[in-house]
Amino acid sequence: MRHEALLVSGLALGLLAGCGEEGPPPEAAVRATRDLGLVESAASIRGRDGGYSLLRDGQAVFFFGDTILASPGEDGSSWRNNTCAASADLDARDGLGGFVEREDALGAPVECFPRTAQEAAFNLAHQGDPCQTEPCGARYAVWPGAVVDDPERARALAFYHLIYAEPGDFNFSRVGSSLAVWPDGQAAPERPELAPGAEHPTQLFPLSDPAFGSAALVDQDRLYAYACETDWVAKPCRLGRAPLADALDRARWEFWAGEAGWVDEPARAEPVMEGNDMLAVGWNRHLERFLAVYNQPMDHRVMLRTAPRPEGPWSAPLEAFECLAPTEGSGWIYDALPHPELAREDGRVQYLTFSRATGFLMSELRLVELELE
Image (tube, rainbow, N blue to C red; front, side, top):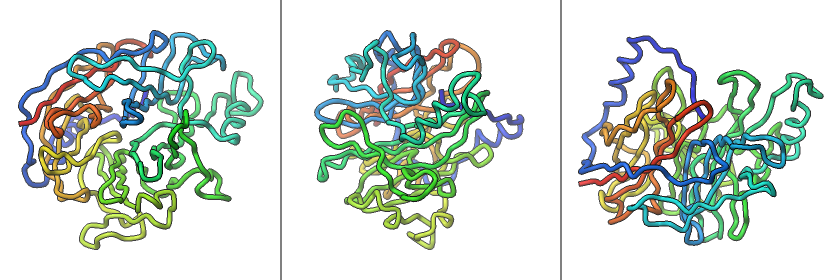
């Protein structure tokens, strides 16, 4: 599961509770929320997080992060760094289910984003204890980010983060971020080489760049992507954009630098709002505004912001509802995400999912209906 180990004092928590209050009042109001219960999943899955989604071939396709299985698959492992599932159930008013997983011969879900041959060889050399190469247990993993459709080019573009991890709690770090291409008719996204000659040639944004992919949207044939990374106890979000047709070309990206406008250097990018590692931003036809949805960091609350443009100015946050807390242990909810393909009445009625821990290496995915005024 994607958690972050942060030790904060009472003072820090107090500052956190009031952070992000800048900006004009939000041009949205919550009328009601309704917990619709569990999202159905295969019996082989003990838990997973995430859930960015899009409409593809008449189905809602969800991209999940770390996934724990009830029994090992063909590879002998009961852990997946990412999985995806599709459902033709687009009416979430009575719950959400009918998901179909990509599975191996043992019925275990397989990973959706492939590893490169280099990454697979590295993981194999460090697998087991003893292993071929120290440190044993070191590995590369792929975590999904936001995904957008590009119907003109018969593809979807899925952000992802390449992670390096070693054994131990929270002993992982980001290597870079990039885009995978999911052509029509393909069973899984492809990770093209976008930086030939680099140590990690599939990475569009190396570690020196912001971790774009926290949220993404398409507006007027441009792809916009947000990077919301930890700054002490806050999660300031920076913004980049590129022509949708040239999104895989790093040279075509530019970054919002406040009063300086759009610039070529990502180091000059300025935060446009505070959010969270995982959030959703998109045009809401009902509000006639861009709407951002995310969990308040280190909290259970779901927050909303509105803006006339992807770069803002973004409103102050509005608390929409509080997620059910984990039933086991400590922690917070971090992955509440709306699913535009399920929304009704031009986005006035939204459907969100979030994961919460229910036991050791166990979690459930819940569905909430959010009704705006």
